[in-house]
Image 1 (cartoon, rainbow over the protein chains, first blue to last red):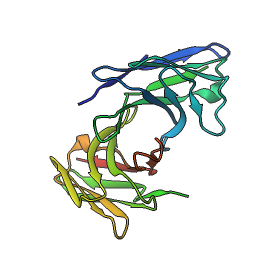
Image 2: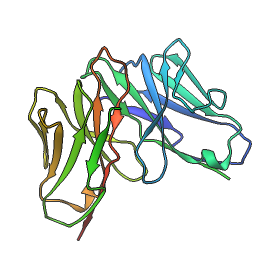
Image 3: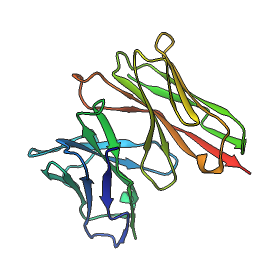
Length: 116
Length: 114
């Protein structure tokens, strides 16, 4: 099946620093990727939709200047958490849409971000 | 508002036993309904996917059913194993021409004890 990877799998950073998370579709091209955030014992919450070659679409309440998304190629999208604060600590999951498979989204393994 | 409700929120069963998880949805029309397994600290992994015209889909010990009339789906796990301990999420996808937004259920946290 389609494989989506994320890097890093976990990261610990100091408050005020920026952190970049990569999402790659390994064996298919994805014109659309999605970024989710998941807090403990809660379901996934969509943050933004990342479209290759264009600006990302952010969900209501998600600060676009804080969560910078770049989708420079058909296999790579990046999420940069700028000036991270402890409340940004969460589990960030990306998914990539494969148009050829039920229009299905395949999820990455997630990135655990801890901001001290 | 389109919603996906799952029950129970959590469930504890003994190893080897069967269990059934429920999903009620109001999303209509929809393209497909999927069940995902999410291990702690990992991303969701697809177990089954059903279009609105399908009634059942199996994947090993996992069997999903869909009743489009009552807008209900269930995931039956047979002969549970310790490795089945995870969250199970029901996800409904809109029609292909209605955007990308998936509607997630809150999940059922299953714990299988020896």
